[in-house]
Length: 334
Ligand code: 3PG
Image (tube, rainbow, N blue to C red; front, side):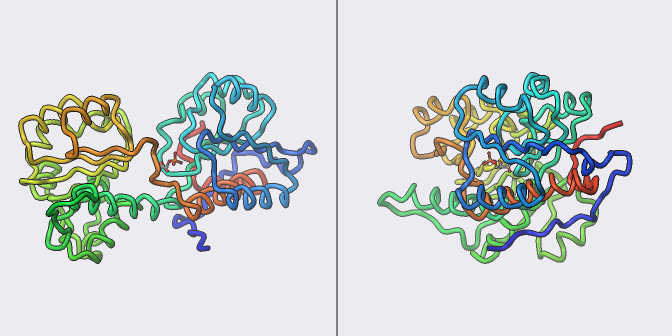
């Protein structure tokens, strides 16, 4: 199985003391409410134990108290979408590093981590293909009436809008092209436009223009204070007739009231999501087959993604303790 290589330059923080001389066995906890594939756990275990550390597993826990008890004595933590709050960190006096096996770290209180001197990392790119494949499959599912009888539509010839051209957006663009779609993207953080040119992707001048062009719009923005509720009535009303919004990103980037209003006023709009809205039951009741939500986020639920992200997490922890490698650190300390 391919392990995706880190794509950034290696970063070593000399100010972080190395832990290799500490005699106690480092304890690495994998705490996943949504467990990794077995093969991923086997790989993590091998990396952790080869480094001389101890692996502790807390999988499928259902109550925060289990997490609070499990972190008590650990030096490192590997998580998925698990909520790592200030309370969890306070219960873990030895904790030095948290690695989010995945891309989005909105579930981790990075400010609290910084305050406690805890390094937070993610594993960018490691589960992107799984999410991209799901996004494309959701487009087909909606275009084909949720796989029920009746005339549907095709992806070929349609405009696929990519909102945020990061690791996932780039793969979705590539797959969309393979289906004969034209690709348009918007990413305010990419100033080097050759990145789009080289991929044969048109750049939208504004987010409004992107939505106005997109028959299918695939969302790949992170959840931040700036993006929360940012996909609103105004943007959705700009979409072409029969458009479908595909959300494999985060639920809170959607202004749910705005979405419901737009879908009420526009009987042609469709919404498919891997991150069910708070008001999903109501959306389902109101809009029937024009909406679809998975019951639990499955974007990164492939063995390949679990192995890539899980093993990357374990390697990042070992490299951090052994060499002070902070390449994928997302919070600033000092
Ligand atoms: C991510 O941010 O990497 C994805 O949303 C996957 O999340 P998961 O690990 O909870 O499946």
